[in-house]
Length: 567
Image 1 (tube, rainbow, N blue to C red):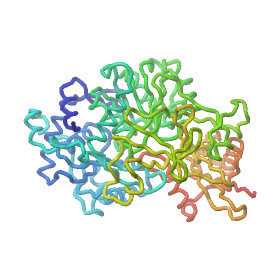
Image 2 (image 1 turned 90 degrees about the vertical axis):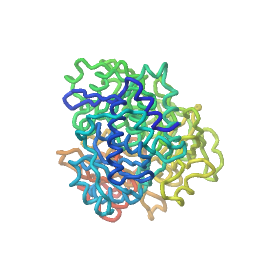
Image 3 (image 1 turned 120 degrees about the horizontal axis):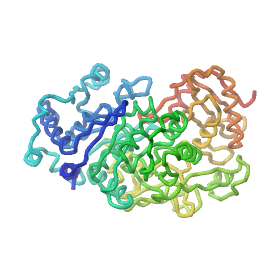
Image 4 (image 1 turned 180 degrees about the vertical axis):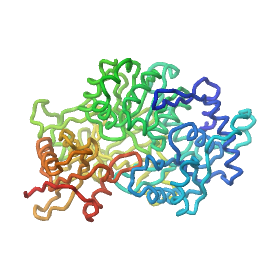
């Protein structure tokens, strides 16, 4: 089976895509209508020179135009990869960053809306690429017969092993790499996800505000919806950022049972949703709030649950998950309908590579509360290995390896990188974790680990320590190691963006330092406060630790104030 066959099956259903507007309005198109429109668009794109196996960049905001264009690329057997739009691009140099991604994927063409052509022209021209428009035209009013039209398009003959989609690694620690995903990869992962849904698939529908250029939004939202098939309600990411309550209102209006989100989205809702926005809000039908893409913090989960309990939200709806782009999307899921599991662990033992429980009333600087991300999905194997590549014993921190039908065939056009990451079918994720009471816990990334006096420390835990320091933006902090020759060890720096309008940067730097020491017992070499928006980020909005470290050490990240160890 291929994605076109899954689309054709979805077209025989009554399901489709719903767009939830900033004003609360809803516009809907069925999968049958979207597939028919995609056939006409595919014919237009073919006339303009787009051919099978061409790598094609799709740069468009969340909307029917995006969905139709993606389906058209599948129909042509092209190799689409989805990038952030200019309005969502958070890099200081959007054109330069986009040009690098276009070159990395060997793009042959860029597909975009007419309104974005001027902003994209520079990146396309730098790569000597043409820009093709995907805007709706009058011709789309005359929809074709599905079966006869599909038979004439090359995508219908796609094999399981054929490349269906290119997506980029997150680029949090290194430059993003293009990942080749086959029809088989995508179908295996979406079916594994659907297999853990309770009850009948027809009982479920989805809702997502995540960008469609991000794997959690594209695969976990849109593609899973038509493979199921089921309804999917989409909220534009820029609308969510402007008004987080829109996501909750879309959940309430649609009655969606499943919705993905990163940890920071929960924090935004807890902080910014007004009491008057809760009137009439019903979150009782949400069964699976899939929380992933970044470190899951129990305190954030509880704060969200307490804030929206009056709207029917249940703490048991939280489903922490783990995955990565190289494994298509999902690797592990927590048990559905069970409250998230968390363990109190001894910080000292964990830093030495051992997961030992500690009393919950122990001093904060001695214990670490870590949330489980559950167990592998059906068909997926997870193995933890030590520094000598041997299986790590249960309770020991090791590198996470994954094997299964959803693991990529390799990095696109990168055979050397593929050989370094894929070994005998096993994917080296670069993530560190441990098994505790038969469940997986994540403990940072191998390349991000800060080693102080021989002990490993997860920078995400250090970053989270400053969340309580008022005036600093949540999830806009980055910690990284620096050499400390005086102590013959590593030290670390923490950089954090301040909230807009908060003037006393020096006081914020001191408060952040105190918060880190109180929460972790670690003493930072320096704590720097930056203006909002200064930290480099991936296209999905996560801070890039490696890039931030390089810029800071090169003197290219200007801090407003710093608090230093020897002051």
